[in-house]
Amino acid sequence: MLGKTKTLCLLAICLLADSAQSLATPPNLNNLEPRQEPRYKAVAAIAQKRRNDALNAFMPMPAVNQTELGNDVRPYLLTSGLLSKDEIKIIKLDAKALVRKMRNQALTSVQVTTAFCKATVIAQNLTNCVTEVLFKEALERAKFLDEHLNRTGEPLGPLHGLPISLKDTFVTPSHPSSIGFAAFANEPTANKSVIVDMLENLGAVLYVKTNVPTAMLMGETINNVWGETVNPIHKKLTPGGSSGGEGAIGAMRASPLGVGTDVGGSIRIPSAYTHLYGLKPSLGRFPTWGAKPAIAGQDIIYSVSGPMSHSLEAVKLFAEAVLSEEAAPWTLDPKMNPMPWRRRVLPDGAKLKFGILPCNDGIVTCHPPVERALKITAKALKDAGHEVVDWAPVNPQGVEALTTQVFTLTGSDAVLPLLKAYDEPLLGVLKLLFPGGETVPQLTPAKLRELIINRNQLQKDNLDQWRATGVDGVIAPANVPAAARLQMDPQKVYGGFTGFGNVMDLTGCTFPVTYADKNLDPKRGSDWVPNGLRDEFVQSDYDPVFWDGAPVGLQVIGQRLEEEKVLEMTEIIANAVQFKDRVYG
Ligand SMILES: *[C@@H]1O[C@H](CO)[C@@H](O)[C@H](O)[C@H]1NC(C)=O
Ligand SMILES: *[C@@H]1O[C@H](CO)[C@@H](O)[C@H](O)[C@H]1NC(C)=O
Ligand SMILES: *[C@@H]1O[C@H](CO)[C@@H](O)[C@H](O)[C@H]1NC(C)=O
Ligand SMILES: *[C@@H]1O[C@H](CO)[C@@H](O)[C@H](O)[C@H]1NC(C)=O
Image (tube, rainbow, N blue to C red; front, side):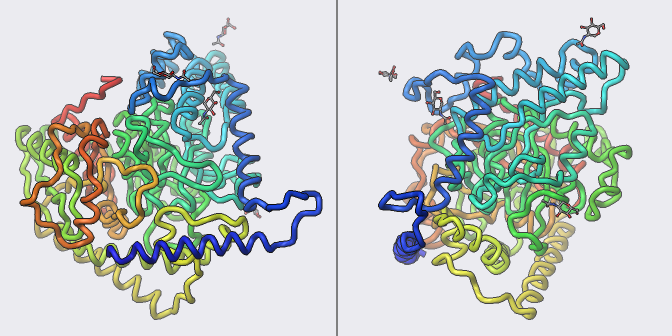
């Protein structure tokens, strides 16, 4: 594994050679600059100006002295004086309380939307989480909803007046949906995603779209159009990815509820990295129809959408509203199961059996703060009277091999031509998924069948193990670090702790547990026996002082289509763990 560093160096040369080639393209006669910039730069400047102008027109930001802010930048929102006392009260309320207050007219949607738009301007300045700004139509919509309620006495749906943020993949015409590609950065869109239409019909106010990594295929949030998003709870760390903009805006409390997507951990990694509850469903619960896909037609490992919020009640509110009989997504998206949300599937006071997936899955060992979070959670559940057993992951080598092959074989011709067209360099793990930036040879019918056979076998093996062990849920790390470093070394990336949930089409929800602590989470000692060179290399990154104060979250995994049970288990776990946020309590 260490030998791969050489490949990367070679790759860097390839990249240089690639941009040298772009110098040879015919120069624009209007542009007499001696050196032509890579094409993505001009496109990115236009997109960023559109965003910055819209934010600045709503509320200009004063200069912020970053050295005066700690690693946790969130207190600035409360202390800067940019939000009024009433607006701070609003952003401290959760989605459920906000909807209740708007329904009984204690608050208007215009007041609530204004507070979250202001908070978003601050969140963008501190974390770079925003792509498209929808404030203008959001405030018009809020005004319409207020007037409707005032006139008719009836709220317009279960999400009446509630601001909801969206991962950039969801299409809100005519705003672009770049998903981190320069090729789409300034392209107007025409057709609303099904979930966008549904949320509007349920009374929501869609006010902002948030950043993703290029092609939404990384566990961090960086691209050549919008740049890199940082974690507001620890600014030297990434908020994860690919729904990392949602992670950052949610942790900033600039969004009471957001929607992300997950094909390898893209809801759960950012949610765990930012102390949010993030629900990853099985295929067929929440609509993804009409969302901009990273790899259109890749249906071996399903991309699914789901809610993310600092409030578990908000996640439930989303699920109940979107899966109500009236909303009926199965009439709008052909992939949906006709399965309305089931309330209270567990009996009162149920004593459950939880499997604990160890912090060493046989390939890679988590950093010490994540191991401590597993211990805290296991102990809290035992103390609350639940059974806790060790649970070995099913064939993590098979899961990793399948995932990498699927993304490489189906992704290279979907992703690379788009990047080449704008001279975009490959970032992060894309360098490893698409070595040398070369499109891989055709996927043969035999290989395609082999991938699907392997996936199906993993699903069957997992089902058998689940039944043999009789667990209700499995508690697992979301990733190796509490949250990864910014621009982490792609060689140190490991997605297996979330990837099995996607390959096996399971349900999962993240929950916050604790903060990394340099005194409680020392480096592993000489008694630690790594699985091998790769494990040792990944672990070598850990530095207790650097990570001090980082958010630590975990996930609970349920079986296929057990979203209701997973949220009820998450509530049981949250009540047992009793996490307290350092800023918001
Ligand atoms: C930022 O704050 C630090 C610490 O208070 C101070 O030393 C520095 O001069 C400030 N920088 C600016 C540009 O005001
Ligand atoms: C934050 O605002 C300051 C002052 O307007 C500006 O100079 C800076 O570029 C902004 N940063 C971001 C990431 O938007
Ligand atoms: C509701 O309607 C009343 C009477 O027309 C008006 O005075 C009040 O300002 C309205 N409130 C809102 C929030 O629109
Ligand atoms: C929008 O949908 C229509 C009807 O399916 C289709 O013809 C059209 O090409 C779509 N437009 C875009 C920009 O995707």
